[in-house]
Length: 298
Figure 1 (tube, rainbow, N blue to C red):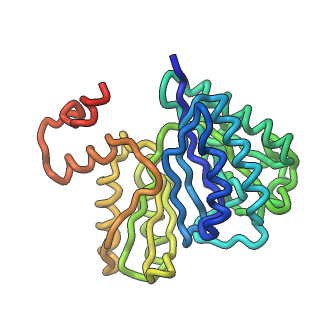
Figure 2: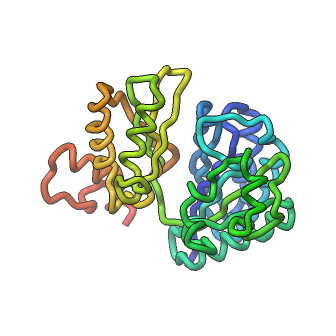
């Protein structure tokens, strides 16, 4: 049985198209690897790549892309709205078909070991691959961002799992892990007041008393003159997209602000959207078996 793993690496470059193409290119034309999507964001200044493949082929392509990113991205001059700590900011492996979470964790560790040795890159393991409970949450690992990593890595409790205890001069630090599928879901507000987005984010994210499986921060979209609640929904089956969308709408009313749209970054499971459609349409007794694509793929 063929084993399939998904990887969704985030690279800290969302503006230079030539650099982005160089980073993404190692995922093209490789046997056992399929590039599904890549989505760049100039405000966040990052590109999110979605790729699937057989474990060994995916491992080789990922390491090649990491090498390119180290060559073309210089974190010393990087600016963006999204928190980041390195050129290859985060590399999650997600079991898809005939692969256990244990196998995904082992793949994450193998890539981390090779990358640390080959590129002299400090690497933290996170989520299911984390070496300690305090390293499971990516936000905690990333806290301090690129600029604060030199001091952070000197703290005994933040010694990297692989690589040197000093950031790579131009590439910073990387987090590699294994996790369940997540949905990168953003909700836009009709205000340019970042404080409002930050307050709403605090109220919806689990870390400060909000919804379980929701991570959220406020982001300023300068070109559009609005702000955004930018989220990672780490288990859409337990906290649905419509639930966080409606909570943001309710919280926004407190500040006289309206929701003006939302966006999905990268790919997401069909079930996440079907669940939301069923809620808003009020469909009774609906089953995924009624989705045409589900029956076709059987």
